[in-house]
Length: 221
Image (cartoon, rainbow, N blue to C red):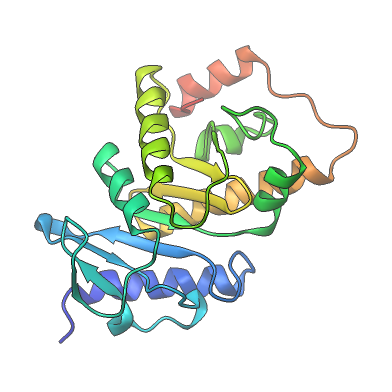
């Protein structure tokens, strides 16, 4: 029996759903999970189609990123590992090239520290503030350092982040499970679509309404 079969099957299930919903295409995107007991990570292989993943394909690496089993790991492994190190609560990291998020980075983000304004309560509640990471080539290890610094900065201001937008490449989201990461990614993508397609641009929720969401739902804006 393949080890960590439940985690492998869940990665494949989420990858297939993302593909079917049009949130990933071709061989773009990657998913990883942190394995229990310090057993390392599972991550999708490099150049794999997320809609066609097979459980035994997934790369199993140790905590230092050395391959233990499966196909060669995604070139974004360094970024995933740094996110797990910087955010102990993260159990899954998910990256896509979803259309409206990439389009947002091409058209111009709202602000560098918040690529979208707080225009809906569910965006504030389920995603929160999403910083922009300047363009670097896919897999550039410099990005891992930049994202880890953004996580630390957000924690210092008592509003932890759960996503960043990589300029021209798309969002990277982390959460307590693949399903939760997918839900946050979908909310981010839908909010980007709303912002890009609405004219005139809607006003953000004001400070009083955001504070109400913090008190009622623990929103992290």
